[in-house]
Length: 109
Image (cartoon, rainbow, N blue to C red; front, top):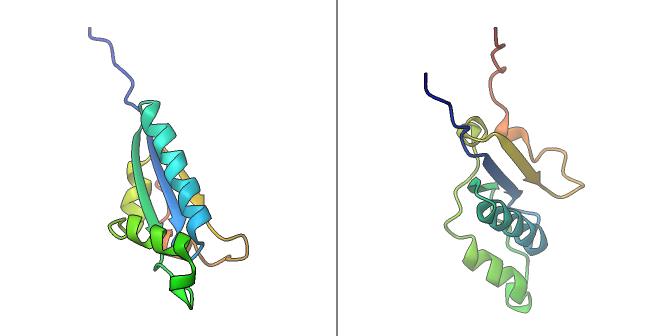
């Protein structure tokens, strides 16, 4: 009889695209630390990236837009893949999680 080796943890780090550079940096930091600890990691964006007016006067936003240009939008498959999900959003946005709603989780028997 063989021994089962536990699968490595899988973390989905999902950040609100409208929350700004600080939230994006926190998401990247969490992902990097989890990766360095041996976890599988997915970084995903929730919703569209929001560009503030007068973008040229916001270098932190420009940098974030450049670094996050290829980050895929989060979806139910990302939650199904992950053992753990961390969702970072603006505290005033109660609608940010709507796009991740999935069908009811089946019960385990």
